[in-house]
Length: 310
Image (cartoon, rainbow, N blue to C red; front, side, top):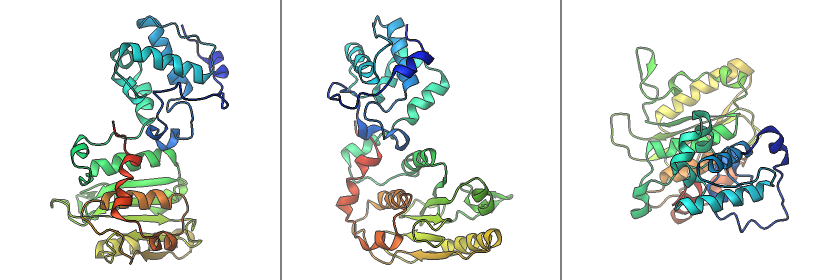
């Protein structure tokens, strides 16, 4: 049986060992918050629990006093014997593992990996991104960066209310003071140019930098990969945020938008929108970002960066 606290202290990484034996570990499958590991997308406690399950219910003899590298190798070897899995994420499809992980452990397992690429992308690699695709991706960056708040993917009539409630999402009730009090200084959303009762036409994105990290000036940035000007709804959002920010900090906030066309085709606007937000989170200067033209083909390759292709 695999123990817990004492064993965890012994699960040290052997950085000088080859990782070739860890065939199930795919570093590009790890979510943003687990991507720094060179051994597993899963944390030590989950690996120990999975080893314990395999020992109890699948006749494994995985030793507890091993380095994380070796522990992972033994788990991978046993799982290869009892299943067709070729990656860590696949482990959650094994009945005994699913059955004996708690709901909290299952959630931690799921959050350790990027979302799967939608099946239809495999036959149509330029398929439009859905609201769900965008939100699953950006949610992981929100979990990784506690100073980041993402309002998801919204229709252009995001400010519409019924009975004091937003028709779509929560952005219509944005409270800048509350965000700043919570330490959230990076705020974003992806928008469709269509309203909530329309089929959808084109994705654009907004990123608010309340600390001035990207350009040394607190700013709201609007990125449309086709370089069209901001809609009146986006301008109204900026005016609302600017007034709230001024009231709370006694500082001004600027508004900049992209006027250089990047996208030429019809399909990659969702990836452009995600890429813009995740790049702004790194503190990149907005003007530098928009001046470096990114082609549709370049963006298409990021589908396999943001999503797992299996």
